[in-house]
Amino acid sequence: METADRVRANTQERINRRIDREIEECVREYAQKSPEEIALRIGELDREWDIERVLETNASALAFTGLVLGVTRNKRWLWLPSIVLPFLFQHAVQGWCPPVPLLRRLGVRTRQEIDREKYALKVLRGDFSQPESLPRPEAALQSVRA
Image (cartoon, rainbow, N blue to C red; front, top):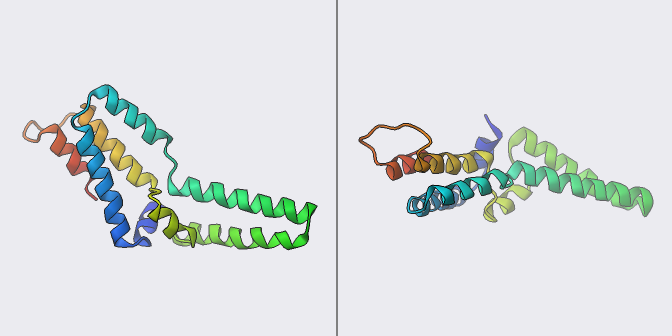
């Protein structure tokens, strides 16, 4: 199972629904905008940090800080990396660790969720051929539904 799926599986359903609803609302909003505005949003999505990147950055910063302070100040600071690194390992194995629920409540998305929005915006922009029977906005909305 992919990490993004494990993150969603370990996230409260109401939070997953909220994130999905926000993606759908964004796609509806951009259905009324120009291809240039859609391209700008796609650029923003390319730069958006997913939950993996946020966790890895925070864990490494905390572990490094604890290590430096443990070596230069007081060995008691070594407790920090000894707590943070097992959390990172737990996330790699299970797709969950204690910071995940907080980050998800704050709206940090998985790469898969970001990519769903990006794909739908590309459908809106007309990047892909599609059946004539389905209007472009409806095709885009169908592509974001989990």
